Image (cartoon, rainbow, N blue to C red):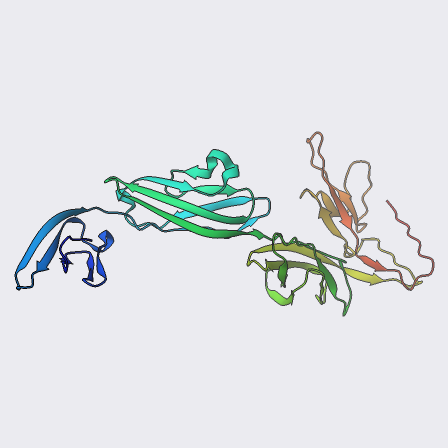
Amino acid sequence: MNSDRPGAVFSGSGVTGNVTDGFVFDPSQASLGSVIITCSVTTAGGCVGSSTRQVSVRFAPALNFTVSTSCIPVEGGNVAFSNLTGGKLLVETWSWNFDDINSGENNFSILVEPVHFYQQPGARSINLTATTFDGCLASLDLDTVFGGQPVSDFTWTSECVTTGSEIAFVSKSVSGLAQIDTLVYTFRTGAGAVLGEMGSSSLADTVRFPFGSEGSYLVELYTENEGGCYDTVTKQVFLRPTIHLDETGYTEGFDQSQGKWTIESEDGLESWVWDVPDFNGFNPVTGDNAWYTDLPEGTPGYLERSWVQSPCFDFTDMDHPLIRMDL
C-alpha cells in the first residue's frame, strides 16, 4: 500500500505493517464484504488528515486435497482425489490437471472429486483451480511421487510333512521401481489363528517353518519396498502326511478308512465319493468301500477337473519299489 504523503499510516481490517517496513492489505485476513481502509498523515505541526477507501472483499477458497494412495502398480492404477476445500457450495467451477500428458483429454477433469488412471508410477505436479460464483480464483499445486507397488508372491517346495520337518517357502515377489527390503511371512491355522511369523530383508532368502502336522494352513506374505509401497498375498497350503515305506511295502484297500487320501479339484467341482459303489453294473458288497465318481445325472457334456490325491510316500528305505493299483 502506497501514499504520496511521507509517513502515511494505513489501518483497517486485514491491514498489517508499519511506516518503516510498509503496509500490506491481505484480503484473506479481512472480513468478507465491504471493508474501510483509512490512510492518515500527521504534519510537522501536528495536524492530522485522513482519507478512506472502501474495498469489497469476496470469498476465495483455501484449496486442499489429498490422494488415495502414493503407490500404484508398475502397469498403472487408479488414484482417487479427496477434495478437502472448505466452502465448496460457493465454488462454481473446478479444474484439475493431473500432470499426465500421455493420458490425453483424461489429463483434465471438472469433477469435485475425480479418479484418474496413471499409466505408470513417477513424480507428478497436480494442480487444482477453483473459481467462485463471484469470480474469485484460487489455485493449488501438489508435488508428489507415486511409487511403484510391489507384487507379493511365493511358493513352497514340498507339501509333505513329517515329524520334526520344516516346509521351505521361496519368494517370487516383484519389487517394482524400488527394491523390496522387507518380507514378513505369517503362518496361520485354517481357522486363522496365528502360529508364528518370520521375517527377511532379502528376496533371495528361503524361509522354513515347522508346521508339525498335516492339514490346511493359511500363509500370508507381506512385502514392502524401499519406497514405502507394500503388497500382501495369502495362500492356502494343504500339507499331506508322509508314509515311510520299507521292504514290507504298503497296502491300502480303503475298506476301513479313506487312507489319508483326499479329494482335490481345479474348478471346485467334486463328484468323488468314498463308499460302497452302487452304480449300474456293479455288485456291491457290504464293507467293500472304494473311491468312485457319482456324476450328476441329466447333465450333457458335464466336465470336472478333480482327482483323489494320495499322501506322500518316502521310498528311501526301499531298493526296488513297485506300484500296483486295482482300478
